[in-house]
Length: 112
Length: 115
Image 1 (cartoon, rainbow over the protein chains, first blue to last red):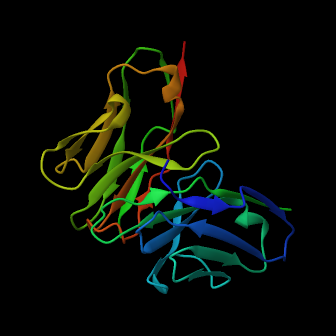
Image 2 (cartoon, rainbow over the protein chains, first blue to last red):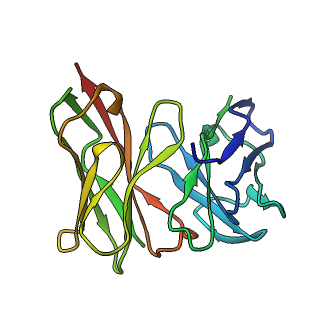
């Protein structure tokens, strides 16, 4: 186990709704990254937060947004959900001097 | 920009047989390489990584990988697989040693170990 937790495990939403996914980083880690893994594909980088600031973003529209809190936990928010947003959302934490990202178990989002 | 190609989408293999999963990357600068495993309905677990030094890297569960800079490859091998190795395997690259940089993943290779 990596010590990275995510909630909820599964989520079902309808098109146009908004969703918030949560991630609790491994103790001592101050960086969190979010990835989207569509069915049958590799994970794709959404964005990263370091010390509560966005620190890099992949090719995702602005309706994907995030927050990182002082305790380094994090949220991923997606507005105006589309069918193609159905995927496994993974968060990964890392810390200063650490050369590896540690992944949580993911949240599976289904958009109907 | 860097990219990763995993040449085999599925690899069926018999128990106790060897397996090799191929990974090639494209980058104009030096990269750092990782292999992750994903068991059904789970997140990603690190198998091994290449940051520098010896090009032969040993990881967990008997896996090893060899970094070949001239061929821009980082193939993963295991000499004898078990049923429990049935999973999806992802090769990934990043541009810096610091974990605070995005990982670019390949499309994955699904390994099915048959008795």
